[in-house]
Length: 85
Image (cartoon, rainbow, N blue to C red; front, side):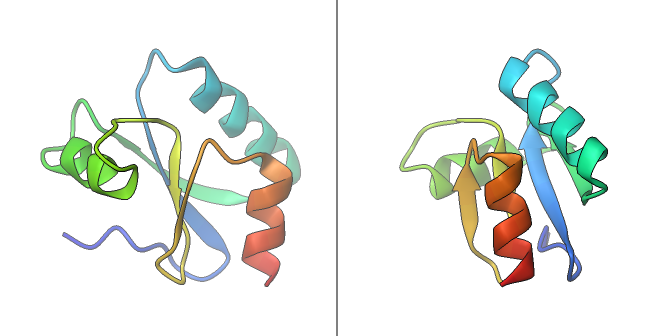
């Protein structure tokens, strides 16, 4: 399954209990940055994908950008900057 987002948006891998995920979502909403949220505890295979992106760790939020690169626990400013690049 391909989780690469459309241009100008991100895919955010998260969990319901992750405080950092909730904070990032609020910041993205406030700045009008679009995202698709994928709960790694509910979508089969995504926990393993997050592990691959994070050197074996299931660290969330993990953000996937349209260019195929990823970031772990980025700030909203970093997301905005990378989407503008």
